[in-house]
Length: 223
Image (cartoon, rainbow, N blue to C red; front, side, top):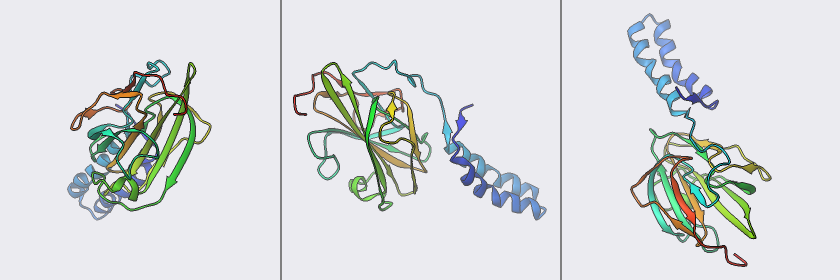
């Protein structure tokens, strides 16, 4: 049985209130049915182990940071991608997916920016720059190259809070846990042109396991 993240405690307590009230009112059958609600909420916060939660992932591989379905894979979208040349993979998480997020690429955290915003449906294009979100950038030195990967936690229509558990200066391993998003959301990953994208739209991906991109060319000077 997977562990349950600590963020589950307050949400599960609230969800358990109707069952408790029904039990106090002398309605045990109703209470038994209502008890399914806190169980479902707790299941949302499940935190399963994933195989490459270590520093043994090939240095050229970029892993999925979230469970879900690829909704876009291609060049960086205008108004979505950071400034510069990027390739983009956007992943939609339904309420039934595991919502623990993982670092797509290991390295030193050089930027963490949390931005307030709206709660538009995460599959909408404008959600990437209008919704509440957290942007994280990691850098990694490989030989004489400095590689940079940018990834973004974005809340959705149901998700109302991003939990980011990394800070500038942290050293992350590829696939390491970095936080979570509550109740259905989206994650974007941005990699430079020197990477080949290995996923397609509509494909299911698994956080910390599915390889979504791979470095195939050296980083250009000044990139």
